[in-house]
Image: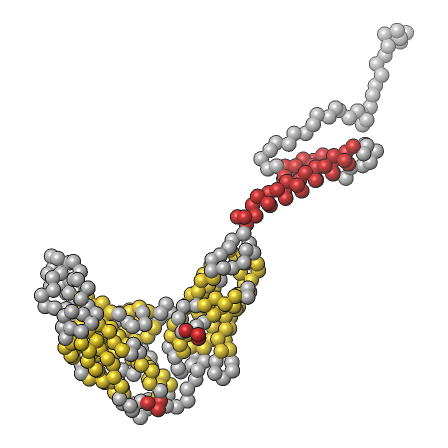
Length: 344
């Protein structure tokens, strides 16, 4: 199993080094192999029609090209994964001719593709990749590398077809100081046909009156993809609802929603500190006016409560209790006998 990223499936397959002591990569500047079309979509009514790829060598030297088919899937990140046990493969139905060809410099050749469906083929879409590989020259120094270009082929078997896509998850930052910000969406194909989200049909998020466009991608049947977008110009502050929806041919839609709070606290720091200071000064002024009204008016806040309040406003400070003379009102007073009086 190996992974290949990209729509055209560029492949680098390492072979054993021809010169073990020199692992320098070969010069690839003369390699220029292209394949057209870069993919084929075969509807049910066109399965029996012959199809062709144009293989072009734009390099300055002749190259030998081998052609083969391979089963593949696309993982959640968009990488092509080649392995033999994938579901819905069309590898046993597709034949390519010729399987080997030699391309002179700046020349092109045609490769035929034919499809033969078995009687028991399951309705719906099946896929296969056609790989065009070049062998390195025998006298290449250093690491010998086989390079390949591939094209996916989507074959739709006649019968009932379902085109249904759902947005299963929407990822946004719950709270952020500001933009730009990344959005992610997970989309699942619950149908039997692939869906292209390209050009005008790209997946979009609606947020704060804007359309945020996701990267282009193709979603295979029974597959899930996680795609990303970048919201470049969000508002300075908002509680924003983000919505992503896809429409299906039967009139149904699949959607997901999420909320992001944008609050630029890093810009509000000075203002918030000034507001807190004004509140504190106002509280202290009100306390002073109540104190000057006279002792006849009872104060509902005790000295202990006031010390706790001040300690909360000024953490780490020591709030000292003012010195208060002893309260004699609760003590009994005994008169001392005067010096001029005594018991006889």
